[in-house]
Image (cartoon, rainbow, N blue to C red; front, side, top):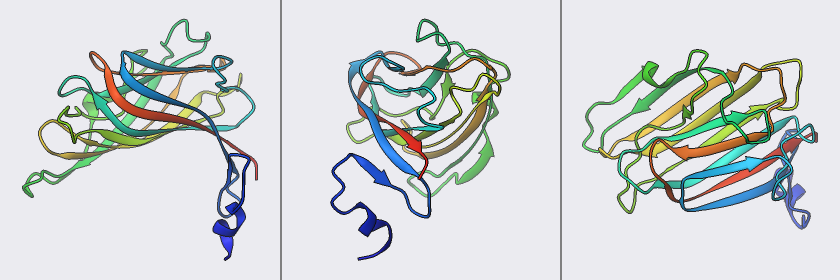
Length: 207
């Protein structure tokens, strides 16, 4: 037994040793949706850490399911402890999709969902279906949230089973255009509720 498997056998601390010097992952918080209008992670609230403790934070989304058909999963940032989720953002998106019947395979720039110095919520998926087997999963990475010098870079990748029976593979990147520390992140659907699914927040520290 060698490598990363051997490093993690018997670890009871909740930390996961990453491969090739990739640091240590710490699970900070898991939120489980149950017809929630929003899911929020606020530094210092309910054991959430979003400060200088970690240089990198990662959210993992598992089977996010909307209450209504054809809803986008979105996020926004706060620099005032969650009082307002309106950090100015500039973003870019490209996507790949392919219908179940084999038609319409496409790779394209998704200009309709990017932001140019916008304060609104940034879509992470296309319009997820709400059939029993439809959902979205993926991850969002945020860098240097506590910096008071630099803007706040983020990258995301998601896969959604959308209402019209396509898998949509989204690549999103951008920055929160603020030199204030970002201390809260909120997720919601473009309308109505997050019916089900989990969001896990990890901190990634030095190896």
